[in-house]
Length: 191
Image (cartoon, rainbow, N blue to C red; front, side, top):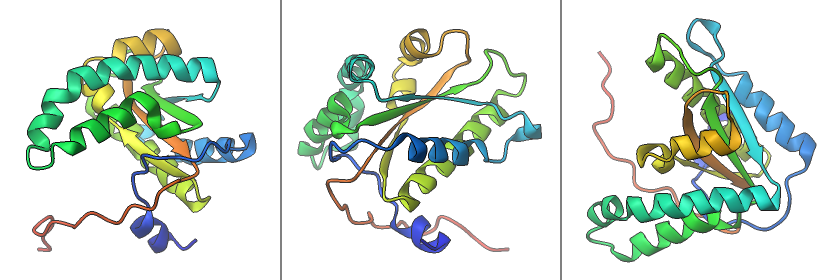
């Protein structure tokens, strides 16, 4: 797939086939994430690829709490489309049937430049999303767990001794083909 095609056709997928992702492909996706640029080359990221069914149930259990706490935010955001609240909460609690959920953390508990560390991990996540899509694997980047205060639960269960939880990313072969949401104007200027 050409870079431009990958960039313009990747979508957030919220419904997946149950087909497993081969280990070699998962490793290649993770390696692409780890090839991201990082602030002063500290490579701040640490990823946990959760695919074990029991461990995925632990992720879903935590995400159930996220969905409950996130509901008021969704109700405000989707006040004109209230059905979207239930759809989003079902995705959060089931992960859309994704066979893998990547959890992104800071590698270390303390970085003097937290903003640089966050930007570095986010760059690695974007690399993961694009690398996955290049292989026909869909994804959805979820920031709600961190936003709703569930970072400690993910860190304690999946990455004790590592740094702050940043985001969760579902991975799997898509069982839907969403259209690109309309792009909003006025998002850049050239001087």
